[in-house]
Length: 346
Image (cartoon, rainbow, N blue to C red; front, side):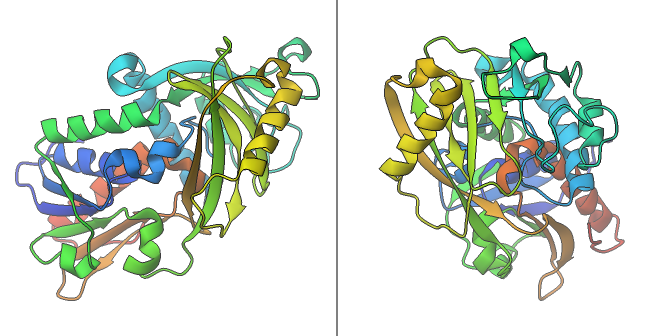
């Protein structure tokens, strides 16, 4: 896209990965952007995320996969500077489809029926796993090298990149979207779970995710077994700060307090596949509330008074995976507004 020369004053509500990537894309296009966020980036749900770039618990699949492919491209480029960006390319094994319950080796790169065919085609080198590459108890899977993001580090990078582009972050809670737009040319609503009250949108609800961080005994690859709709998942993600073990996906559970029994069950599930982790030293327990919705809301309308409002929320467990693709769509919508054609739905 060609950078525009007459920017708008834009308020982005929400300082997680969706809000920051949207803000960066707009600021780097020449707009004057201010992010309004109740929490510091490190205190958002994004900071708790495991950080694997893979479409998970998100609809509609066709659009989500397109957004994911774009984010894959951006994160792959950022992985050339891992210490700065928090993104790395890491090989791993997926042993269940995230789009359905089919055998994990079916459909990879072959236009399968789980809605992720375009994603399979976009991941270089993705292939069915050989039996020797699977943990004991896993019947099938596939191997892929994908971005794995250290989210606390990545959020710091995003804030710094936004500042470098001329954007700002203001620690405050938006009382309403109309209030956010009072002195702006446009508002972008990236409030995640907060959209339940701000939009207001009763379809937004939490999917609670609990994970355990343990000392890494030397594991260098990720492993995931997580079917869409499953309450309990099994995964491990090697991060610089420790090995992330997961997890849970509990609809409409609001608690942010780790449950010791759930944590014990998570470690036990992972240890059945990787016995060396049974006695790994626990470093931390974390709980995050994924901002879920039947489908992502990426649409535009007008606030009372005519200020354009773009919604970008409801990404569930795939925020980092779709962030840059969704940010590109936000930019296209803003440009449509700027050209005088009025807000358009996504």
